[in-house]
Image 1 (cartoon, rainbow, N blue to C red):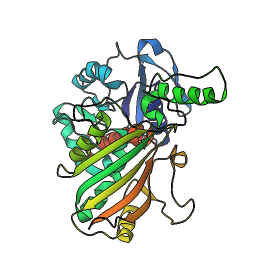
Image 2: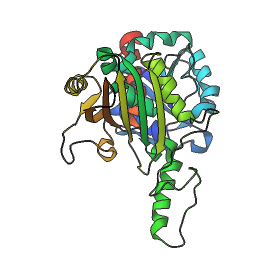
Image 3: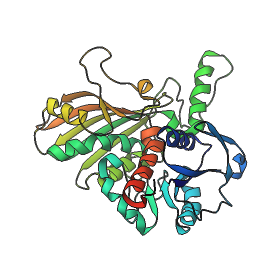
Image 4: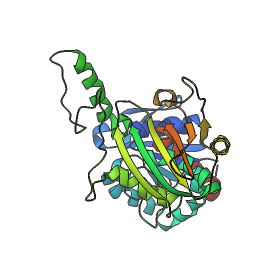
Length: 340
């Protein structure tokens, strides 16, 4: 016996990945519905060897459906998620709307699976920000061993994190560099993204940090430990898919880099590729389409008593969004619904 699954936002980058991953992982499904806005109504979406026609999110009846994976942004989620939840369909939301709600669990299954039981308060579960998701997978096993005091992270985030418009802008600007008269002015981003990096993701806040940087701080505290101090600098880079992060971690107790490497090798969701030689590390291009969070460049930080540096890379459309949502659905099935 399987589940009745809804994917809302099925025509977007993340929604399409949700459908792909549900099929790849052979999630037990009795029925599936692909929902979209009216402007995308009737669009074909691939689901394994099947083709689904999108249905209208605005008129869809969620009654009798078990789980809805939402990838429609905060505004649409604010309208439709409560409707689905009230109808008895558990919502797994990829937007930022519910992440900081104390009555909504924010889950990365490898990190805080036990939080799944908190879904019942609102029938909603939040998926974390893409940059947070991959980082906490690496932080949690190290925190369990040596207790993390402080994290300093710089991110190198791909344009797919800004949706199809971001990917199109990089593509068109890149072509425009080489073709006189076809230059493309910034539209999705605040400055040229082709052959450039932009230290600005989301809006600026009063204290000078951006909302993306604030998200990493708040979400790491909620998912891993509220006592961890986090400071982030989030940068958009001219990469289509795959977020990278340079992470500096300060621990309460000493942790040798060799032990850290072994801990990470044995941890769920992580693949360590860390050879001290040319090419002995993972880059964004190599992580595309993969489930794992890749860790490289693990080394001692000699400037503090208990410090480790590492390089963290993951497919942001997968572990940073769609894969994590499907893993939450799997967890929900295993621990709560238990139908499959």
